[in-house]
Image (cartoon, one colour):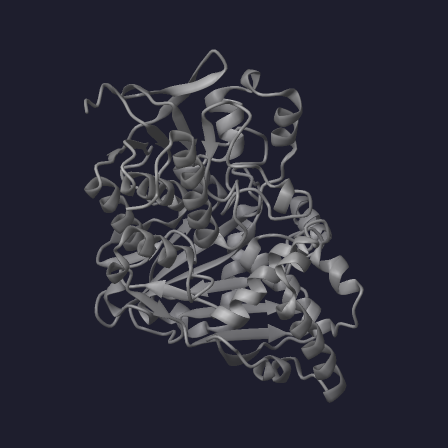
Length: 490
């Protein structure tokens, strides 16, 4: 097909995990697919880059759930399960500092399924009575049925905990978890979303990685799209979604115009509706919802190239009772009240795959929640707090640092998501998984504009990061195939 224009069954805007999962599923079932990606490679926010023999993601990334994640389900569906090459996380380092203390205490915690909470209880120094209370709350959370979880879409995790006798230390941990796993404050994150992820961690394991990094997995998916007859157009900007007689009919790009009866956007609901298609093509109440929708937080990331291999675990968490953000603490930061220390999450690719760095060297990816605002005036101060917090627990790192590089909301917006509303664009996932934006209130993959669909973390599935995006992409593909009359039986 000519790069100056063409006709397809489905066009996908954006090659993030959701778009790739959608495109690969469609192409595998014979749908003529064109994917258009603004960057010189697919992968979106989960891309793996290579510099001077080091390979790493732009931000700290691990797979939750470890067992049967979206990628595994997709690879099985595509018949390429042998390519996945997943590495499971056995243990992780957790460092905690109680309020009023100057010292972090560290444990090594099991991360496989059926994990024992005893190391955490020891870390928190809980007495027997509080251990029983904490265990009761954790057990109740893990045993929630799908129907009970659906009933918590309109309940924040903080409100759910308020109805139970919860030791402060467990509350503080869950507040940190809301930040680190969902990029949300505990007083806004939907209890249904956080509880589902806690269930996945408890039952299916708490982290995983892939040989060659997430980008290698995403490249395999892109190659499968091509192998099944799909086309991927890189380094191409989509200027608009073309609409004729109230129906999406294709796209106009910097490389030409392409037509299809179905257009699927992995570019985010706000850029899709407000910029690419245009609000005039949607009902007023839908446009208002899109404008009012709250993005998840962004991520302030520092990558360190080390001349020695200092960290042995694949995952590190550093937090204290004063470091996580609820809405009040977040708003204080936005006013310029920068905390002394912050939540720090670290992934170490070389702990899973030694080829991710030159022999004897290491790359570590260190991050902390940040506003989604690409113009955040306090981001440099936040980077400083990330580094100063890290120094308190792992000073050895700074004796062997070779280079640092940074990625924050501004870089995320430039790489993967247009900022079409003030304060938005740099979110690390997509729309916030908060009360009012999950479950039945999460946007449907099928928009009110005929022929226009959404995929990725702004529509459809629950869960974390790439798992959520991949599951959403496959679900959107199923809807599109139903529309096109394509059978899924091979």
